[in-house]
Length: 133
Image (cartoon, rainbow, N blue to C red):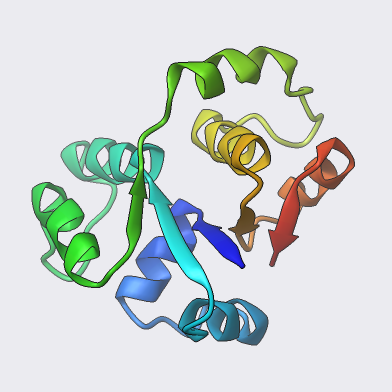
């Protein structure tokens, strides 16, 4: 399975947090699965870190791509065609986070299973999102 971690799942994976569901943790550690992280998540972490809203056990965002590369994580750029597809992604009443919308769009466009604990994202299943909560 090809998996895309959302930003919280990425942080929880890096910090070995118990916030990850058993199903998500099992999928992440399964050696048959390919784990992907989007430049969108790295950007979100960088923005929140620069605003003083996020700290990950002393990890500087500038080092994050190197750490992920060393761990064998596939790094994905957010491509112009995916950005253009955002226009087609329906707005959901209870969900407006632009970073999450970019990740949902990327997961659908690339046929990846998104790991996220955000229950509001389940509304995108009707639009083609494969989701592990």
